[in-house]
Amino acid sequence: MDIAYVPIIVVCCYVIGEIYKLIFKKIDSTYKFIPIVTIVVGGLLAILMFFTAPELVNAENAYEALVIGFVSGAGSTGTNQIIKQLFQKKSEGEENDQANE
Image (cartoon, rainbow, N blue to C red; front, side, top):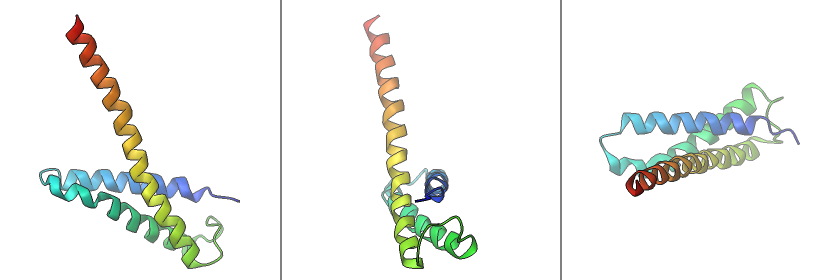
């Protein structure tokens, strides 16, 4: 199964989520909508790719492409959390090392 388009959608949704955070950086209450935005954008990207470049999308119909896009968009939120946790742990460890000195 050729799924090369899934990482493309994940990266695009991740970037759109980061842009969303920059646009609404002063309104923290809007951050809760980021997963919804990335899921919808993922679905739209998958549908767009299904109709414009069907050789990239290994889906038999538009509904299947939409579901794969939704999951890829949700995956971008998970990717964001992985990156956030990795850098948060590193910076917390550095602060503890400096406090112990």
